[in-house]
Image 1 (cartoon, rainbow, N blue to C red):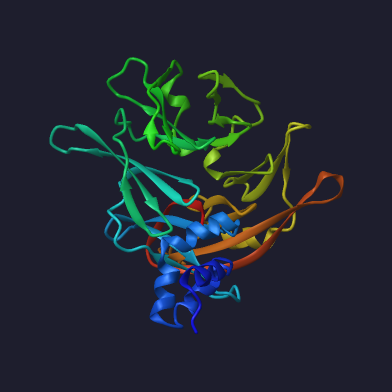
Image 2 (cartoon, rainbow, N blue to C red):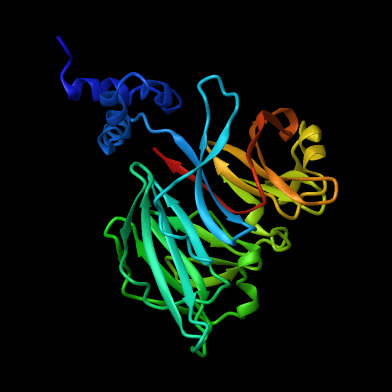
Length: 347
């Protein structure tokens, strides 16, 4: 006598996702259950969700941007990036934000004939890898755009070229799936908001290279001068500690907010030996309380040949020292790719 399907789903939902590829080989029925969005809804209700790494890559050979996910075996060996098929082409001028089990995509298309900008907005449900259109962005922003999440709201900071006040903040509410009615104009120099600097969220505020934005007050403030020189695209905030990868020094630093100083994370000399020479192209992301490094691999003459990944756990020792440990380091994919962005998704 076979078990009812709801009981089977309840059992499978408690199993770590790394075992799903093996379970799907049992039968067509099990394969359909593993692929069902229902199993992820049950995982969420049971509190069995896991962190899953997604990566946006640009293929330098055809300039196409595609979404990949990290696939790890149960034994932790032979990790690889797997292409997510049947998705629309990702925008060339786009930003990507992960909230829960979804990736939100906001992009700008520019007509080559009249230089007119139009916006695109949609979400990717990573439980089923399906796309849901979103309400159009209130304004099409310029290329130098950055975004982050506070309290289920996505704050998008960028430029509107035809406005006297160039810097604006748009807010998308992921609960209502609607744009907030108000658009905040920010009377700050456009040069202080640049995508190459990135941004981070800490204490419900958004930090850019020179300024910090308080959504409650809808205004910019100056922040700690010790943070001003940092490019926040290499920053991860974990348990209210800022971790910053310095491409100049090729090391990982932690910010001591009490002493207002940076400390080098110990124990990672081997990793940074592997990174040397590739500092300008790597990406970092906070992932399950750890820092993940996505590192391009190159030939002797500097031609890209693939991407490898290192997951670093962090531990505080005596005297305030912080130690890093490489949990695993593996080659993920071969090819001539540029790493656009890495995202931590809950499934």
